[in-house]
Length: 397
Image 1 (tube, rainbow, N blue to C red):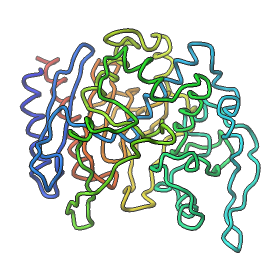
Image 2 (cartoon, rainbow, N blue to C red; image 1 turned 120 degrees about the horizontal axis):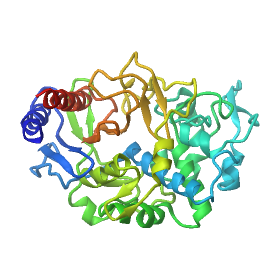
Image 3 (cartoon, rainbow, N blue to C red; image 1 turned 90 degrees about the vertical axis):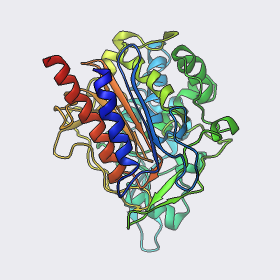
Image 4 (cartoon, rainbow, N blue to C red; image 1 turned 60 degrees about the vertical axis):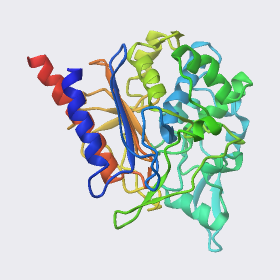
């Protein structure tokens, strides 16, 4: 199957870097439980430079960081050091200072009140705590524009001190929840999040090139950020997350390679076992992958800041839930991804899925804003669809 899929996948990658509109460059990989069965790269790291995209190119991973932070949280639950249903302020006191915003008064000042209940780490893991992002929330965008609320890309504590959009536990709203999970991890361990990742996740997985603190070794292989214009053109951007961040942002702050991320995906395919040691217990993985949202559902992400995100949704019309801490498609997806599989994305049009039923996972990486870029997202869906078509064909043979 791998030989047949390689030709199909190579063609998809080559098409997205030569079509109109196109992507500057892309890396995509597919793994089974044992090893990568496809590794591909096409195009260039920068649209205005000659450096070819390669499988060892490094990327700003954005929200694909979240599942790694979620894994660190689950480790602390296993250790008996974290109660998911205790107030999160027990571990990260500053979250207890956040109030609910009910709108703005006549002078444009936010109207705030105390929340009806405490935020718990379970709510943070499920994105039900009441936190948002300015590029998906009109209220947060107004706070940024009128109240100088700092952006999360500043990697500052101030960027996390936002009001809650609703009382904790009442809705699903995608936002800075997992950044606060990182603060919970730091509060319990007394170590920076990157240090926790290094010893408890990266070393047992054999991950070498993943970090919150970008340096020259990362920069030398970095895929450049690009802005997609309304006319479809691409413009290189001067973009870099802080090299010495005040906060290791568990929701979006990592840089790394696709190959290293595949090691993380394989751990989830293998019930928590990494190449060099166990990361999670099998029963933890089996618990975590389930829908923990109850009757609440994942909703479309409205693109409030057009330069950062389009309106975006996976598999419109299909029911989607949330686990610890991935999206779960409740029904079989149009790509062939089975019901109950896991996946998510990163703002610069990075996408992955983890299919524990069949034992495969994939990752597609570009560096383009806004999110939901038709060329990159469409190419990713073609890549995933081609895999499942090939899988069905190989099983029928």
